[in-house]
Every structure is written in structure tokens, then in C-alpha cells.
Image 1 (cartoon, each protein chain N blue to C red):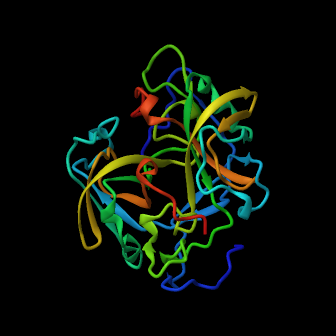
Image 2 (cartoon, each protein chain N blue to C red; image 1 turned 30 degrees about the horizontal axis):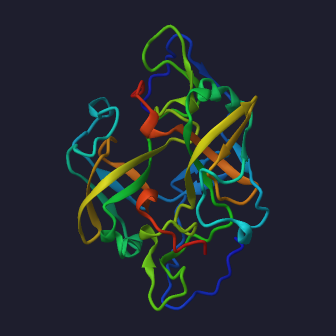
Image 3 (tube, rainbow over the protein chains, first blue to last red; image 1 turned 120 degrees about the horizontal axis):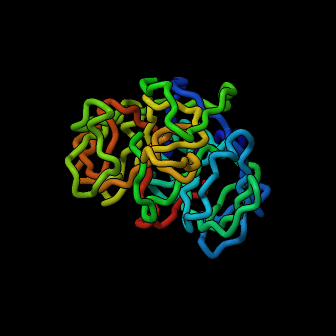
Length: 155
Length: 155
């Protein structure tokens, strides 16, 4: 956790320990042009720079058919984020907003979610545009964009 | 895990144990009209039935300001799903597709993601439309829909 422990005015942290109700397995990582969190843009842009999603074995086999989609939803673990704020003051203003009315990386379960454009695939590596996370961010999931997806599923 | 352990033709499971790289805290639960997984629709519909998102304390305080958004992204834990398939055959066809080219609930990290319309709020309960999950599904996160959100964040 690299956040400062200093709260901004009007921010509120909870001090109850977070339960560990389920576990996540990192299935790869994301390479971006931004080595530090301070370098990251606030939101990804579909016309932003190329980034690379690297899917580790055995999960690379689950990429079969991914080329059919122009647009993907990427879930990743915001490993540098504190998790204890319920009210945040990201704009340094004179009030704070609830965590669930922000897309801040600080959340009880710090999962980042971006819609990206799939540029290409080489083996277990996807080139995409639209991310904003720090390089080295752990990968959690890849889904076809819901707007493009006709469901086969329900299994 | 309530999935049958029987694979359909062309499906492939991995048998390596999943590492526990990070932990999730359930922050509430979701109440829907569907008590069993077999009852759930394959995709949520914005004109579907009302569902209720219940945010447990202390995280209910993080709902401050949520009423400003008509549309939210909801992340939840698909607690009934197996996690070990890399190729799936949801349509019972003569081939299988990679897990990451499906929105099936079966994934290495079974996180469900739906875009919902916010109908109303009463305290720690949100009435929404657009979900498809079984009643009792654990809640992981609530984010303002990215299409409606002007970033304040980056903190």
C-alpha cells in the first residue's frame, strides 16, 4: 500500500478489518507506458497508447476466439490502493463524496474495470488501447464487451 | 460449488490449484426474483424486474451521492461457479470457446459485472434494474457508469 495515510479534509476511513470472504487468483499482468501511479491518466482513452495484456499459462488457453471481439472489458487488481475510505475528496474541494459515487482506485475491493479496444493478439499477449493503470498491474479477468456480445452462456 | 463436475464435449478444465493472490471482502448482497441459478435470465435487461442491492455497514456510508447517477456498474461474486474451465461449450455445440471469449459465470475469478439502471435508494438499499444473478449473490463493488462519469478521481 503506497497511499499516504494522511486523509484530506472531509475524508472518512473505517477502521474495521476487512474480512477475507473470497480469494482472487492473478491470471497475468498488464504492461503500460506508466511505471508509477502518478504517471497514469485519470481515465483510459480508446485512442490512447498501446498497452499489453499478458495472460499466464494455463489461462492463455482461455483466449481461444478472443479475436472475434473488437472491444473487451478488463478487470484488474489495483494493488497499490488503500481499501478503507468511505468518503473521499479527490478534487481537494470543500466536501467529500461516497466511494461508490467515484471511480477512484480506492475502494473496499480495489478492482479496476476498463473497456478496451483489441488491436491484436500474439500468443498469450493482447495489444489493447483504453487502459490507465500502472505497469505491472495484476490481471483478474477478460470479458467480451457486453454491447458486442450475444450470449451463448448460462452454463 | 454447485456445478456438475461432468464436462460437456470439447470442454477443458485445468487441474492446477488456484493461488490465493488477493482477498475480497463481501460488502453486501443482492436480492433478485431468482432463487436458483436455473431460474436466472442469461443477460440482465434494463427493462427487467426490480432487484435490490443491500450494502452492509460500514460501507453504506460510501453510497453518499449515488443518487446523481442513473446508471451504475455492479460487481458481484458468482459464488456458485466452478473456476477451472479454459474451454467451454455453453451452447452444447460441436466445439468449445475460450472462457475469455464468453461471459459465462465460469471463470478463474468468477466476478459478475452488470450495468444497471438506478431506480431509487432507501437508506442502504438500492433498487435497480438490469441484473441477472441468483438471489443472495455477494456484492463486491458499485461504480458510477463510466459513460456518465466525469472523473474527479486519480487519488
